[in-house]
Length: 213
Image (cartoon, rainbow, N blue to C red; front, side, top):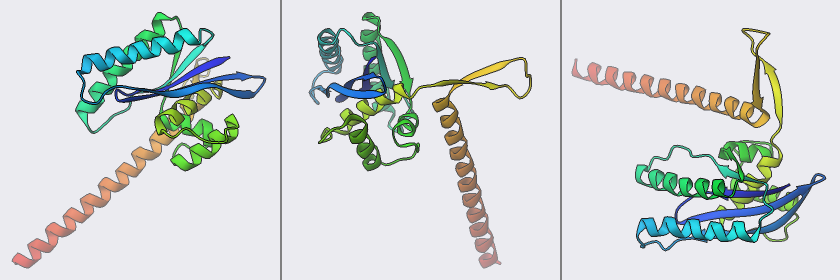
């Protein structure tokens, strides 16, 4: 199986192609598509499409593409531009009849390191082991793309019975289940944080009230 991993963006788009056979990984090619920072945005999108087309024509044996799922970005303008670039990437892959799979950063880290909150250094070290690389790519975008390619090879399905009705089966990927658990932890931490803020505000309000009296 030959997998193309893609870390989407509009200034730098990391990509990594690996083969996976008999539980052995082999790096085929990796790099980064770049677009001129101050150029007209539609022209940047056009360059992304042209460069990706060139990669796909060089490697006609790519079986699947593993691309980072779009996640919320506090910078709305940047998020919209990344989404547009990602649309161009998905459309280009689709034109070549390449199956597309999407994974979150948490899922990729979980697949590589075994922990969804791993830092960059931990991910890099494991990538070197998986791919037997002497030196890692200089750009994070390229390393992230290779991680996404490996993530797809760890994608295994299992069946979990729905607790409300034993006759119905609910199918998840192992990584999806981990992501659900990680998301739940985030929600619990957010609740604790909001509770602490609320208590702090109430305490401050009470102290002001006591000073006035």
